Amino acid sequence: MKARFLIPLVIFLVLVVFLAIGLTRDPRDVPSVLINKEAPVISLPSLYDESQIVSSETMKGRVWLVNVWGTWCPECWREHDFLMYLKNEGVPIVGIDWRDDSDDAKKMLAQQGNPFIAVGIDPESKAVMDWGVYGAPETFLIDKKGFIRWKHTGGLNAELWRNELKPLMAQLEAE
Amino acid sequence: MRRLLLSLLLCLPLLANATIEAYQFDDPVKEARYKKLIEELRCLVCQNQNLADSNAELAQDMRSLTYDMVKRGASEEEVVTYMVDRYGDFVMYRPPLRSSTYLLWAGPFIILVSAVVVLINIIRRKSREAVPEISADDIAKAEQLLNQNKDDQQTKDSDK
Image (cartoon, rainbow over all chains, first blue to last red; front, side, top):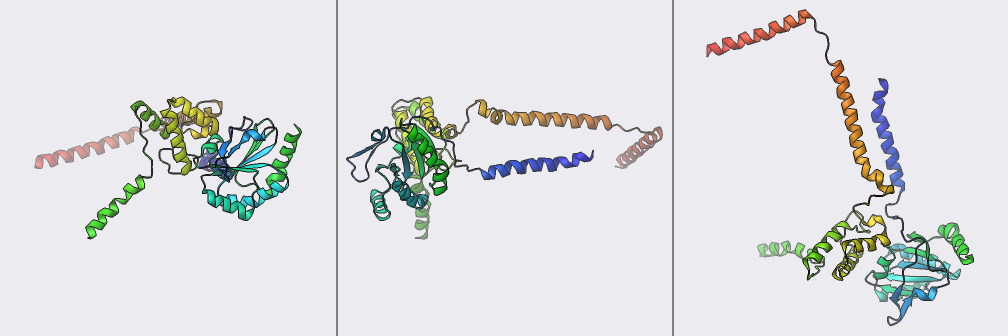
């Protein structure tokens, strides 16, 4: 009989547990369906010369990164230094400049360094929608066969590089 | 003057509205298909809005892509498949029925059924213990009280 008074408390505690789990999750971290699928073909006009096409075809046989960014995105500014570090480590990064003002983008790359081997502009989210991107920055790792093997939503940092990206890239290089 | 200013101010929402693009369709079937699609697809930037309600830039581009596909003759299913292939099931407001979503679909009914079972149990138990023994004396007393009241009523009625 006494135990019945505990029922509301038990229900409350169960709710607390569920809500606590909910709080630790990031609703923006939508699982990507593209992992282990063939990467969509990139074919975008280059930031520096719009008559030139930045194409993913030229990257066949390499392990490389795609980074979606824009000068309007504060997290991309924060990430920029780290991308420069990756460039010095010899990581090839293709940039997709999303819905951006090309002059602003060129200015930012001139001032803070250009970590990309090529930058395509995507003013109408063409490539962005192909890649299932909904926020910047977002980074994809593509293997030698052209499959997406890893994805990160949000800025890259040293911890991620050390714990996830670097070991995975070494493994993919060996494949 | 003030009235003119007020009426101009009231026109402001029209301007705000104009930012949502109006797409032209030559075929009403396609237009209906487009409208249904942007109602059912989720904007991934503002996650609790659909494409029709969202003014996010990505939503604009997703609407424009939907428009292009529908205009080229894509079926509803083709557009949804295209989006799901890239953004996952999350892009659909109505989650599909599959093994990972059984609990989501069945959950409310499970809760409803268990609530009804609990309710029936409570009512049964209550009705079982609800009939207390009444002694003959108490019944006589109650009858007397009831009849007394009736007499009062009658005298009151005859007074009128």
